Image 1 (cartoon, rainbow, N blue to C red):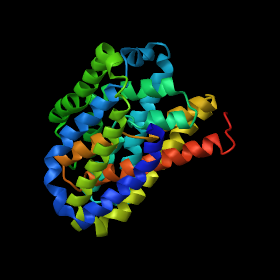
Image 2 (image 1 turned 30 degrees about the vertical axis):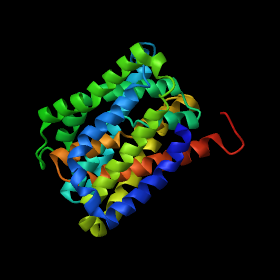
Image 3 (image 1 turned 60 degrees about the vertical axis):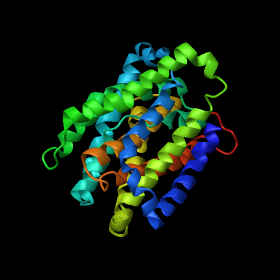
Image 4 (image 1 turned 180 degrees about the vertical axis):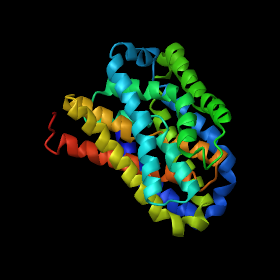
Amino acid sequence: MMTLLIRLFPVLAVVVSVFAVLNPQFLTGLKPAIVPLLGIVMFGMGITLLPDDFLKVFRRPLLVLFGLVMQFTMMPLIAWLLGTFLNLPLEVLAGLVLVGACPGGTASNVICYLARGDVALSITLTAVSTLCAVLFTPLLTWVYIGQNVDVPVMPMIKDIFLVVVFPVVLGVLGNVYAGRYLEGVKHIFPVVSMVVIVLIIGIIMALNQSQLVNLLWPVVLAVVLHNSLGLACGYGLPALLGYDKRTCRTLAIEVGMQNSGLGVALAGKYFTATAALPGAIFSIWHNLSGAILAAIWTGRNGNKT
């Protein structure tokens, strides 16, 4: 089910985006709902996790640390360099950097599975990077754009804890204490999460309807380059250090795929709706690029290397 959703997600997101641009009046009023909607997505992520997924960091500490360092150094730096090189408007640059400073994406574990990567490592990196994001996401955003844009670090830390960490912890506790009772409905949570993310994308597109003519293609170019360079660096650096292909695939996916929903929510609340546009486009693109990359890596003949 989840594999099918990942493959259909970009199409559904584009359809909803077109609807939002043609009929913005139906979605613009939902802007205040973006942050609570993200909380639903993060709870859905938590319900699939167990405490052991976080504790696995102690089994391979150096590898997990390496993945986290790449995640939180490469992606915000690449975002800032691209935004500066492409001369993006300041609010778009802020949104792109914010996406780069976010933790691993909630769909990365499924993409890792499709790519025959190390799913256990992927889950651990996503879980741990999500916890680290409480501090790293606001601080890194401030480091790169704080001299030009007011970055409210402490309120962002509070929001990430309440909207990301708290729902994830609730989901994990629910899985621990009521997991056996939820087995019959667990498959619903990924569906709900996907629908919610598509709705968030639609809201952002509706809010930016009047500016899309001038901003859409520069933002699309920046997002495609950002994601592509993240995937390439996330694979290339471990390969240079001698890691096996399976580990390189996993690290590439974790580095290149961001929790862009978090970037959208924070940008929309603390910056502008336009700043949330890179996150919305990233949400569409990284699922598509991840699925394509997984298909290339595995090959049509079912190659398992």
